[in-house]
Image (cartoon, rainbow, N blue to C red; front, side, top):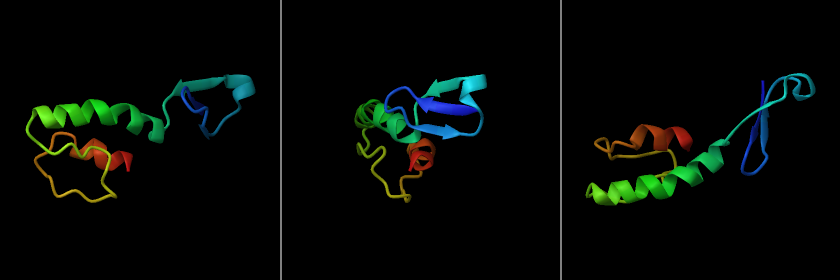
Amino acid sequence: MKFQCIRCRFTWGEGEPEVDGYSHGLCTGCLKDALAPLYRRRQITEGNFDCFGRSSGFCDRHDCKYREICLALN
């Protein structure tokens, strides 16, 4: 199925949108932009660094609740 980001209109996946249409959602970049402020506020509230989405694929904060999703979005 073809997917199209509702924010930036980026298209990915395989299929025939003329026949099947598009499934809509957020691409990885837009999802990261949407989640970052929310998770950063939560990190501060929990007494942690507000670093969500700022890593370049490495994170030594193994106790962070958001570590897995953060690294998956990078």
